[in-house]
Length: 263
Image (tube, rainbow, N blue to C red; front, side, top):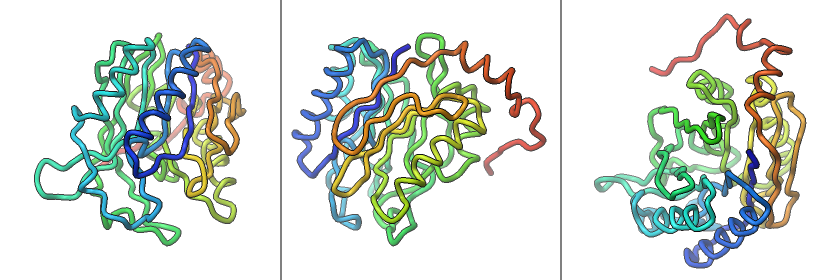
């Protein structure tokens, strides 16, 4: 299976964001991709981290989700993309990732658990954290798990997905720039791959707010593809047989003494 991470910088212009995403999906499809991962908040992003977002939130069957489904069907690719999901009532919206299959139907959605209340940011002021529910889907014989950005800093989140069967983990993100932040991003992507013997696909928004540096890491922690700082794509082959091979060589999952649970 050929997977592609497709990075760009979303803005407050929803139409422009969708156009950017559509162009990247078309590029990925033209190179034969089966799975395209777009960044966190691909639908809408305000450069002011504390700006109100509830008024821009949409339902998971709203215009953005519908457009992503149409893109998937048009190009025959599965797509993972981040959006701001409206609350059922008057509460704060969710930071949500939706996953759609090649026919444009939703595999499901993941709502961010760990909100970015760090490095001077307060995501929880405007976004509602959600209970941990593992989203996995199977594509071409490979089981893929989903988490979002800051979740990457919590190793139990990746292990939770692996316990649910994940052989690859996708991480849509908007990894904010800052001293050594890019190093954290790359290091954590590789660490989650190594300790769980899975592929990890990190897809981040690009500058000026976020650092880009999207990458696909193999189950031994080697970077198979990376996209640098500018908008663009990077692709690599994912193979369930490779995961199985690495898990024989490095049986850390079989040897572990602790499990992960959420209460």
